[in-house]
Image (cartoon, rainbow, N blue to C red):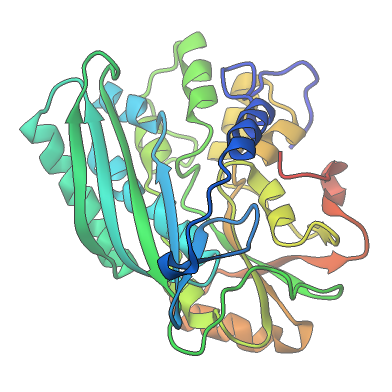
Length: 350
């Protein structure tokens, strides 16, 4: 991969993550209410993947996310099952990043008009995702709001818990010398589609043409559902040698900063990304910096482990469904995330 100065960016396509962070900070500055302890005690894990609350002896984790503008591509080619599965993946993977086991999910569908055929296809994908995550559908909300939504918007909220004796994996135990294990993604998952769609439209790309992977159309490759990591995370979370877990979603490799901002994640063994990523990079003249801060670049989940337990951790991950987990780097002194081969360094999440 190579850097192309002046290429397209996620911010120029309409999603400026720095602006999102600034706006969110403004919101949180004025949300000051704290309920009495009888309503549960929030667990402090600022900037992490899910919120947590302690109720009696139990700790619960809650997260919410949407499929984003990937649904626009789904509508364009009339394929809905994949984004139905994504409703589950984008949420339970954030629970997995804390070591929480998914207990249930509620879905949210906003649309301009209900379509039984579309809803049925979404439901089939939703069912596949729930089976993969071992998660129940607890209910949901469907709102027909044509004055707000043009088309359809999909999201959900997931609830997780920590099996008896398991503490949340927040990354505070990450230390210099740890090994960073990467578990491959299934493709672009559900991130960066505002940028992807802009590139496809501007270049009038035929979505029916063969994708760069050579086994499916471009549309099918881009719509490949988010890989669900609940099972593999559950197999290692809570073990003494596992110091951190991370879901590489929006923000790309910068997500690792959320584990510990006072160490450096040196990703000096990053594997060659699957063909869809260099294809998108060439299509938009994107820099390496933009690629690694927008997309997962072939690694969807990370497990940070003590070096003395590397082989054992890989065996556990393999038995749980991730025989493809590979070392992609290490933890060193410093701050942020660094990819030496690409000359890249990120100090903050956004």
